Image (cartoon, rainbow, N blue to C red; front, side, top):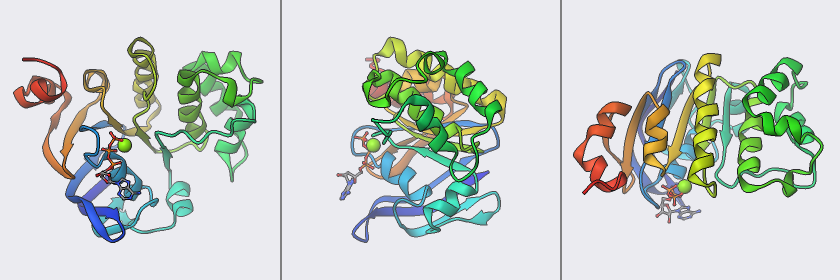
Length: 232
Ligand SMILES: Nc1ncnc2c1ncn2[C@@H]1O[C@H](COP(=O)(O)OP(=O)(O)OP(=O)(O)O)[C@@H](O)[C@H]1O
Ligand SMILES: [Mg+2]
């Protein structure tokens, strides 16, 4: 579905992500793990068209989307949830969801699916998004992206600011997207959590892929255990 080939991405024409190859197959959940400043957000933003592709290519469903306008990438079926969420704080939960479907009409089946995945949002349809808790706002940001009926959902640290006990729920909801045929590419620092639901993953450090493998292979890897799982 998605193939990132020898990608360079960065700022002011200077690459901070170098020669990155990643792949996401249909219906797969793929994790990008790495510490602060590793280049995770830069990588995801260049795939979505929010930052230029300086070199290499991004192939989606067989065609290049490198440096295409964001609205074209979005209409092709890729939805992005930034770490900062960017909700409309003065609008209700329901109104935020309606805007997520734009430029299409909101689909009532999709809205029902979202309330099934995130029951809390169904209970708070008329609450202003800005008055929801941090974790609820994160759920709403993911739900709003799902309103666009994406084929590939790209999430940048969806558990930022959420207690680990609640982050488990967020990931349980994300795991069920597989059953709905939605592929997920997710950057995350809560490594045990994301590897508990991912199919495969990549370790990104200093802008380069250091390691890749199945979630089980990464969990068992001594380097991953030492650096990210706190195993001595
Ligand atoms: N707008 C920007 N202009 C210049 N440099 C930037 C900009 N945004 C990020 N960088 C730099 O690019 C590098 C990669 O940052 P990036 O945000 O991709 O890391 P990250 O892996 O997402 O980290 P975190 O886990 O903290 O979100 C860092 O050195 C950062 O300082
Ligand atoms: Mg980041």
